[in-house]
Image (cartoon, rainbow, N blue to C red; front, side, top):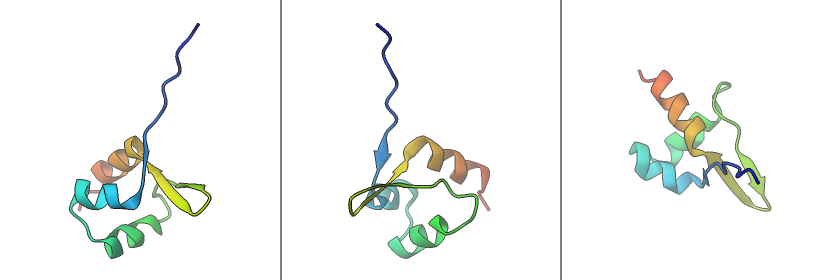
Length: 61
């Protein structure tokens, strides 16, 4: 039996602390065209940790 890698999906609050950005900045970033798309589970919005890390690292200014 093969095991599947389950990617981590986290809420915006997780990333506020991880990248030291405010809630407003996070939501502004999420509107950028190249930003990773979130998934929605009911009212909850989650982003992929690995995709966001990659985006932040490649778009440092």
